Image (cartoon, rainbow, N blue to C red; front, side, top):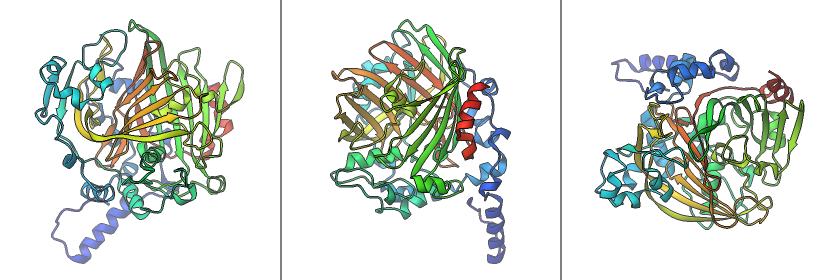
Length: 489
């Protein structure tokens, strides 16, 4: 319900207004709009934000507020003051109160790479890989940042229903004796908003695993993805889309709780359909995925290959294969999508640090862009944020990565940077992403955000700026029939 300004109404008059407003912004599952009626094509997105050299703040003119049906947008918008207050209560702090102690001489303002030489505090404020990117664009990798603006630290928060579920379920989610989730104890919201104790690192990772990002994982995303060799010449010009549904712990959109009877009986967590539209040699390749809440239940991953006109079931080792044309494996989808399990490629979990860093800020306008010259990230804004640094050391020698390091926002549990090291301890691949931020929705997504993937062994990189909106998909949109028919289009 939106905040009502002082209107000078009687109590009964005010109650009437409250009822009317509540009815105006409440939609049942049957009333959610068909995603096909409002989702844009990639060509329409390109008209509002070109793939290169386009500084337009398109989220202010072509964001959820402008594109979604009005009732749907209103149903997903809430009182900002209420969200701020409740989220500060459940996590126990506000980000502005936890920063400003490291290199306090570095204040909000505009900077270039030359300022790093004058101010040694920047090296203290940034993780090493980000510090190394603050320079003009040049081989061997895309995504350098020659100039940036530091903005004041903001209090960030999640949508009101998510915060309410987090508070309601506080202390109810449990881990077993080895620190792994007892799935039947988690019912929605952030499982561990105040991580603590001997399994603190695992609690943080479960907050990522059950993430509330992108309208609680009920979304559609469409994007270009570009790959560049060590000379910064494009060697992959792709496009993809994803339909995604959350099946458990639903708090934002009906049906609440479990998506349906099947999801409850089978303990299903999420499902999605990922497909390539370009380039031509991979167009029509679609992946259908179904993830379980149970650590011992193998996730179902199916791949439709149009050249064979066959559906192939992917094994646990197949998820370590590189995604076509990208500098990541299937377990790196969305930056991180690997199951936390004590038996299937288990990790040792450690919290290395809890401190502030200067990081690429979540964008509220989408003005950031990629330059055609040097493949630089431009219009980048930075923000001091309190972070957790978590290390996952792989215990199975058969897994492709020896260990991973995550840089995770302590207020939102969004991960900002991931370092993946090979079995010999050498930096192999990195993932970097900021987020689109919609304050009135209390929502982070990849809409308008810049994302970067780098392969530090093969000296290859990939960049993309995605467009994403909430969507109410059904089972039929994720079925085997949908998988094959999508690939045949």
